[in-house]
Image 1: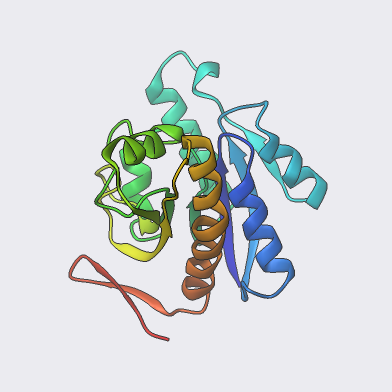
Image 2 (image 1 turned 30 degrees about the vertical axis):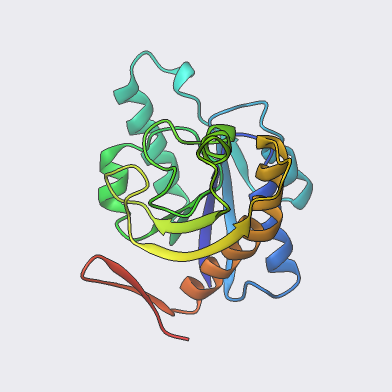
Length: 208
């Protein structure tokens, strides 16, 4: 059984998609051990509580220095002995030591088709604002392993979503969530839980 830590900062819609997929059998051989947020007011924590999943808030604001936060964050994460860390809208830069310790064991969902509209500063609505500004006809979402760069790790899954006439960043954000993020994030977890993903020469290889 693959033990997951899901890291969140906001509403937790991707967390909900994971919980639903475990409940309905789209994710097999996996369970959520803990939900960790940097934001005490994140609704995602409420979602975890309602499900009876262990949850906690670890905020950088509670520490004098970033180094202390990084150390405590990693210690707390390690205490849960999880196999996979899932970034589901987590808006904190991960400590380099954590990325090192959890090499190829951290995945992230990004609301665009990487390498488009990704990297530093591209998160949340900003991604969709830029896609609309550029006039792209197709956008989507990407699940990738996390490495020391920003959105540069091996890509596991991608799913395209059409941009429609009259889209606002908010409307497009919702469509990308519904048609891509909530589908490919659970699918990636299921593939990893069933040992169907490996990293070879810096690329994620899927064996169905």
